[in-house]
Amino acid sequence: ITKKLDIIDRMYEAASRCGVKFIMGSSYQSWNTKLLWNPEHYDEVFELNRQVIEDVARNFCSSEAFAGWYIANEFHDGVNFSPNWFEEECNSALAAYLEKTASYMKSFKNVPVCVAPALFRGRPAKLTGELYDRLFARTPSVDILYLQDCAGRGPDMVTSVTVDLPNYFAEIKKACD
Image (tube, rainbow, N blue to C red; front, side, top):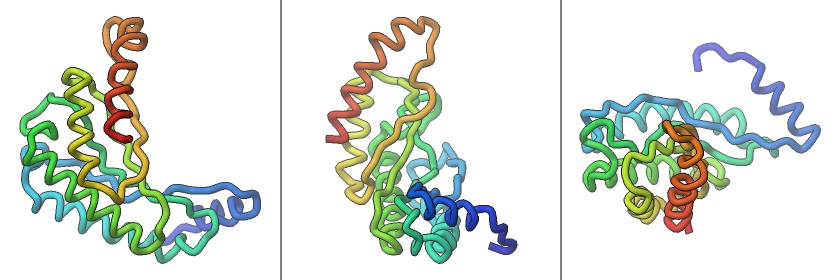
């Protein structure tokens, strides 16, 4: 950090006084979608995040308000580009990155690490569940999955929310269990 603002320090001070907890994230780096298979691409992203993780640890891990880590690099079940994370080589490279990052975060403070992938629903629900099953089998240091945007999208919102979404949620839940 070259210039430090005190806003987060003040947020932590206020949180400590009233029992509020924070989850702090890594830097968000966009993926080069042409290199999702390449472990060196993930190493580059890790190095950028390493600096942020170390700064967060140095400044906030000692606080009672520090309750968890968040790996901000978003991934998803979409197939709108190739290669994608359904492919074994890409899934394996992503898993190695997530595990390396989560383990590094926990080396500073052993609190839960979460990820928040998008739910594009680009394949049948069962295949999406299998994607996450393979991923989570290789990432024991990742503790929490928060699904984010795209979950309720689609031209037929009634079918999307009442039929499709429960199927996806059920398959992803199985992968998390």
